[in-house]
Length: 236
Image (cartoon, rainbow, N blue to C red):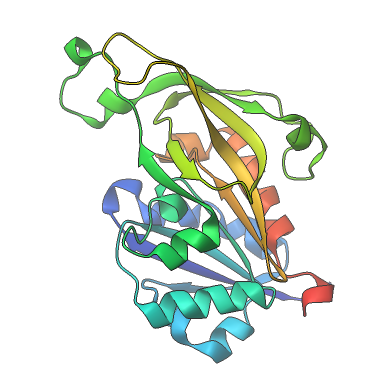
């Protein structure tokens, strides 16, 4: 099999453990004949030669900042066929000030609703809610999520603002509670793909902590997403 090239870009907010989280997936990439380059900043995105030589970008960069030339370089690489994937805040809560980045990935974290106020103790568990990631009809047929049952989790449940140029493979529903300001349940995309030029983007919103990333179904979706997003021969 021809060796492929993956670029892991990690950093930003340490609460998502970008080093340990990405290292969970390095053996998978190596088993699937990727050579892996790891970068701790987004500077590489502005290196046109490096990006042209990259078949897949795995990004775990929560919040942080990105320059205009870096996001332009990433977008140009995806348009030319480089795949882009990531999970949770590492891809949809990245570079909040960049509308061009938001345009590329198609969705952005808005919030993760919390527990009832009287139950909150001031830690991250205040935002851990039992919820279900429900595979859509499209998802049942898609190679990333085919055969995956609905996923029950107790972790952050992302509320995502998005456009309609995404193909939604799974959703999650935010119910209304007495302490919430919204008046009816809200359905958010939880797993989606996006075609961008010759490239493919895959977003998986579960993944706040290592135990969620190690959930068999979540991990399977992320790993399948890496393979699906990778540059295809027609995009070479």
